[in-house]
Amino acid sequence: MANPLTVIQLLPGLDAGGVERSTLEIAAALLDAGHRAIVVSAGGRLLPALEAIGAEHVTLGIGSKSPLTLRHVPALRRLFRDTAPDIVHARSRLPAWLARAALRGGDSEQQKPHFVTTVHGMNSPGRYSRVMTSGERVICVSDSVRAYVLQHYPTLDSSRLQVIPRGIDPNAFPRGFSPSQQWREQLDADYPQLASGRLLLLPGRGTRLKGHVHAIDLLAALRATGVDARLLLAGAQQSGRDRYLDELRARIAAAGVQDFVAITPPRGDMRELYAISDLVLQVSDKPESFGRSVLEAIASGKPVLGWNHGGVGEQLQALYPTGAVALGDAPQLLRRAIELLHAPPALPATIPDRYTLARMQHDTLALYSQLARG
Image 1 (cartoon, rainbow, N blue to C red):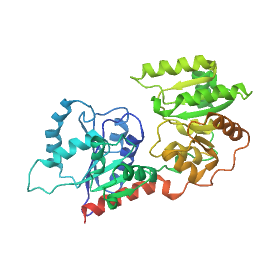
Image 2: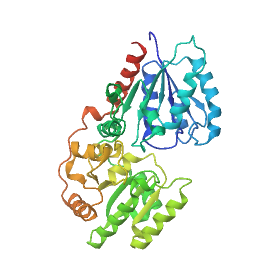
Image 3: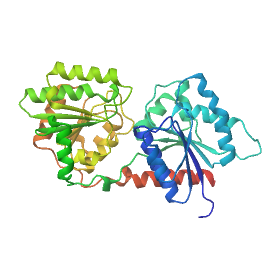
Image 4: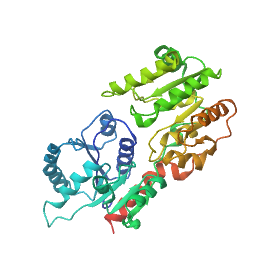
């Protein structure tokens, strides 16, 4: 391939989340197109997956909020000098600050790489977060994020912003998929409380922002109306989140639903979990930047219920408006859940191209090429 690109992506770690998934997806697209993909992070659970696709990884703790993190600037500067990247792509605030510091130094005769940032979340506005608007191109993962950025940074040149929605591979979540009997038996053995009834699924990390308490309260309310509902909090059990998990378990016990809730670590079988679910929840208190699980659920043929704000509200309004409920309206959440469990409206037949993984990868690589080749 003529003139292959070298792209360095920077993020804090490779454990779990949308930032990490996007990083792997773009690395895969770069390699498939004959480019070079380098990722800088502290490593984590997804590192083997990154290395399995052939990407290079440089281990640096660039996400630790400590003055000691500045010691990594010289290492980044050497990396930029030795690899001569065409693009440096920062996906988080502290890595972006460190990358900018590294780019300011070095060989003045060496051509500087183009600097790209992606605003993955609706971070608290201010000088620290402003760095995510400093790229030559600023990728916004949804229209909601673009509006948020312009609201809080009104002097920003909007022509530098480009909306590239996150995307899914619809083939990874086939409608009508049925898990194997062995898989189902193992799940029932691990979590017998899910073996019957109507299953509510809330995919999300172990953080208060994901709104797990709303799902627990909804479960209790559903059961009080006579609905034999069960709840799976997939991915909420994470190391370092023990105090939060204790709070969740206390909330579950107080609601009297301890025999109907399962909490799991991050899992690699979301296709199967969507397939057996009756209703997927997205009730984050903080507006999500995108809402990928909305697309995954709809692709799987499952109704979705969530708060009508941020990226989740944006996806629901575009694809399944029946599932959008005003933020914090618990009585309406209950009424809509009952409706969706008993007679859900038809789901879109397909996921629009705008929200596919292939489109996200294509548009991101096109942005890289445009910058690198003028």
